[in-house]
Length: 452
Ligand code: F0G
Image 1 (cartoon, rainbow, N blue to C red):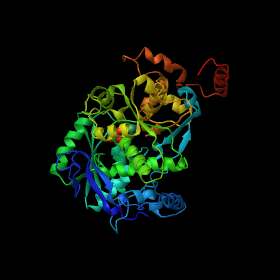
Image 2 (cartoon, protein in one colour):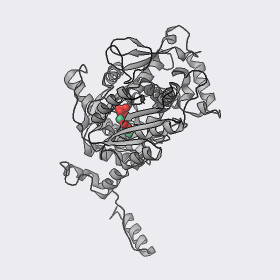
Image 3 (cartoon, protein in one colour):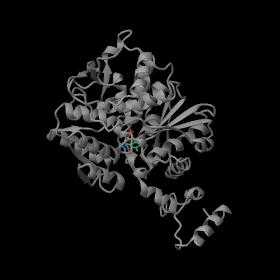
Image 4 (tube, rainbow, N blue to C red):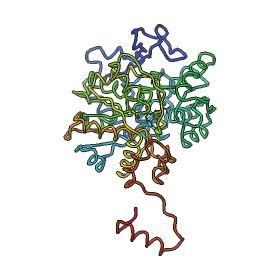
């Protein structure tokens, strides 16, 4: 039985040295590379009894304790432990549903397609699973301030967990490049929200300076405790599949922490005997924000090719991803693919996911768009089971959705001509006189297939 994750250590993925404490920039003080949490205890034979942990995790589902009701801390036996007397900051994150996507499956050409909807977390994105762990460690270390640079979801999540944990939060976001929904969340949760006249990568650069000068705890995903919480999406997914391993898990790629965390989870679960094979983990990026795609294709994953990022999927508008080495390792270790998709393909896939009654934000829809390509290439076979990780809720970006349905999304852009494929999916609102006649006429014409 594992009970001593206090023995969890922070190890550098570059030079292998062990860090005592987390440095202000959350990186290795020897070589500047990223850190990861490792569990020395696990190498001892019999340290982990997978069968009893599976049963214990299920039993915790019936408990009323906050740490059991959290879909992250329920798996605390494979997470770093807080010291005695430190409670986790939890909003009962995790516990997200797995849905079948029957019509998307038909469109993509696979028989078994599911979505793990991480947008059903408390602040509407997968970030909550990592924020509960990292914010709890920030509070344990006595920090009054936490901070992040963000494309909007990290900031919304961080602001919420900081508020719940009695800490102040500092948010750096690219001016005019995050959605109103995400901005409004961090305001409501009381964050000091600074809109910088730069992009996400520029915000990250500024924040790296700020953390050197002020005692703020960095909550971007360079923080290795974030990834430990984010691992639980994969653990929970496998539990929901009764520990039967899907053939493919497909993840959107931005700063590349989520793909890294999900990969770390499945590799750890296999090493510990929870599962007997690895799913292939594939990462999909927007064409205009494709540093991982280029890094793998042009440099065999050995050297990062940073890009100037541009995509309407603003959550993944990132050109210089921090966790690229971790993500390359996951691709190689699991045999996953990396692919890129166009803006029109993203918009189409998002509407198709909507038609299955699920919905998601644009960045999440790259998964379905990418799957279609991977099936065409023969990388994903028709009979294989596939899980898409949907990272954010539909309501995170209502402006995109409205423009899509009004047919304005690509007006005046280079993609205007390609956007014709979207017309059958568009449902613009119909303005009518306030009469039953008008509504009935509309219904009749829809039934006849003449309109909408
Ligand atoms: N999907 C959504 C909805 C996101 O918000 C993000 C990242 C990603 C996918 C990509 O995940 O960075 O781990 O590869 N959003 C960050 C933010 C960067 O600041 O909210 P990743």
